[in-house]
Image (cartoon, rainbow, N blue to C red; front, side):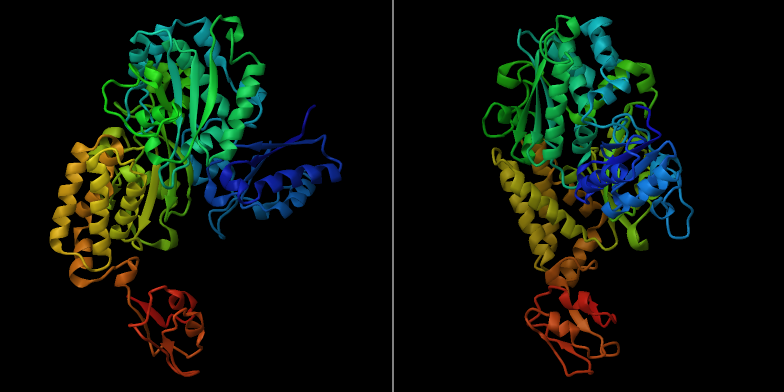
Length: 595
């Protein structure tokens, strides 16, 4: 059937939580009601990336890019766009109220991006293997099965310079080569989809939008190293990604792309999904393997590395979702093409979840070597509310805070490590002047305390001790000597912890101490939190010159601690105040002061 229009509806988790599924159903219903169902195909895709403006609907061939769409807008889109051929201008993207409408390619958020991993997200129906094949899907597998020897596949991956996107940045080809050379008739391929960093959703979105790319890459990896079975280890909190993986596996088996004698090549490979219970430590490869085996997820010493002795003691290749999503492109476009992108030591692109105090939050993919300034201010559109930039946290609880003077640093594994942070899996949280570094460090340390498996003393005891010191400081009870203790414990944890959970848990604290020591000292000496985030140090007062005596603050106060006569200035009793901030939020005249 020849359709005149195609309507792509974002079907990622973020947009689905904003009723994109209802939008999708309404568009189909309206097309039928208006008698144009034969003229338009409505397709549910993966994430477009521009999460700040979701739900997103894109209409082809006009390239109309609709943002913040609501279910009730479906009638107008069909009636105007499909029936009458006119765009619904009120839904088209505008940078601001004064700006002209823009097509996707003209939107600043997309202009400096380059999609390899996310190539099919927002483009195809992730539940259709035919649409994946139409965009060169499984072409790389065909090449790997019939045109390349296993050693040639590994040589191509090595030549591409692809490094692991899960955090450590180990060369992918070398890992595959080690597994290939390890003796044994049974070997395994494991996809690490246990994405646990706060604010990170790169792997989830990749699977939701393009699950077949992961399956194809795993079969190629199996062919390269001599493995016939693979596991996808994914956290159970990702129901949509899991469902689409199940659909993709069933389709691949139906098409002879998984299972016995794939495409008549004589090569067998099958894949099973294993659900994780949400333990952050299971992102560490040896803890992940323990979990797959049905044991408690705890890391073990290395060496031996998994490529030599992994799952059930057999050679095992573990790659994360983003790493695997690059593999089909490396084989179809060639190692030289891939290696031409990025920097000398960090090839290709990197996917980031850009969140925090940023105007354009979302999922982005940029060439390695793109600067942090370009990401935050060009792609991200700068800081919300015109606030001043304070720092950007890369690498989640394992990374550090990068400050303004380093914003022109080109992103690479080495450059971020040199700044006291790390690439990590790709979380990037932007902070403004309204954020408190003590509060941020305390949050990440609390996360690490909860997620530590407890196997090694440096992590089990060190994270708890650091959290206790940070908690003291946040309450105005700290001493200057506590800062030296934080640094000493942090350095000890970094050197002595068994895995990188403990080995990197101190990074946020150490980096903020290096860049914002004065702010820590304010908490200790002046009992003051300049950002007003540490509740014990916040004081609420009422400015009598601005207070009109409306009494709204008193009515909202849960204690209550606010008194005053009607139409006369009110007063807050500091001895009773629980620092909840309800009065500050309720006041419409700026009379309540927070300091």
